[in-house]
Image (cartoon, rainbow, N blue to C red; front, side, top):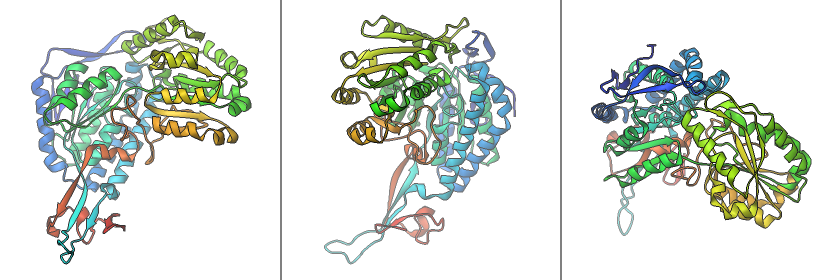
Length: 525
């Protein structure tokens, strides 16, 4: 595996035509990290997209077995460089080594999960309706349909997950699984980590005998390079994880193209936690410990960080409040991912502190280095929250706001007032849950994942997982970025009418050579 080069990967070639340079920065010290990465030129970007389109002619027709082999090779290659990733990624992100090891394992598991799905093959949703030439008043034709890949896909790396939501993360894995070449836009927070993983992907493509252009990795200013990618007429879809402002800007470009394309953005979520009276009475202190662990995990820089905690003021909340205040007050400061995220957290916290409707209940220990985040605990009531939309804004960092209410109607009003969320959590005993089915129904409408008696941080990589939700959690609440249904993002249904059997895709041929599950004349067999 090659060392870091500071260059973009255009197909199988390293390239650096621009004099503009992007450096990774150690967030704890502010030190620029070497090497600097040359920003991709317009010509380089166009070349990457053109190669992707050329590769699609072959890769888009590849078998599930071939794609599965590629995904497994990528996972194997990433595991081979795990020591390098553990050494470099913490320098670029401030994340601890155990977190990088966990992410490496998750990334590889995700690649292998998609491999198993495409190898088995039933994900294409094959449907066959046989002809009926004797049907009156008109004969019925033979029609068959299945999912086919969209074409070249742009993927944007996330700042907060340098592996699992970056170069070889979920969007890349699902796009490759569907048969779409991928062009990745690296994130400036971890350019070296991106290059190491990019090398692993490129080598896997080469070793698989697949065409140049199945994968490219580009560096450049986030706004300019990202906008150019989404605007490019040969890009057919894009996956993004990042800020609400950045996501909405790219959404607009994707929608206003002469040929609009699907744009899947994960953007903003405060992930409400509702604690019902029975649970509060039975395990208030325990819930405080769990909430504190969840809100501080990864310095609160998880998309599923519980930024809102809703409690009934008529229940016995004092043990809970006392414990969470104690835990927050003794929380050490920690390094955030980069100065931009740190500044946004400080600015958002300052706005809440200055809001007369909000009480700052507790503040963690202050740090002395750069990009240091204090753990914060805020308190407000339901009337104030409902009357001030700014209190529902995401504060991306180790904090939560407790909102008190004094009756069920106000609790339900709070739930109904929420924007779309990635997650929503309810803590309750059996009686609580039975009496609050209506709350669960509201949250089902508001969130992509609803939890009972747990905490939202952490996303299980499995077939059934949904990591998505109504706007603004994502740009398209019908999809997920985690779980094997993510393949659907980068595919479309094609119907083949009156085709000779020999010209049909193997998935639709009469004798079912792949032995996959299919719907035939309305019956799944």
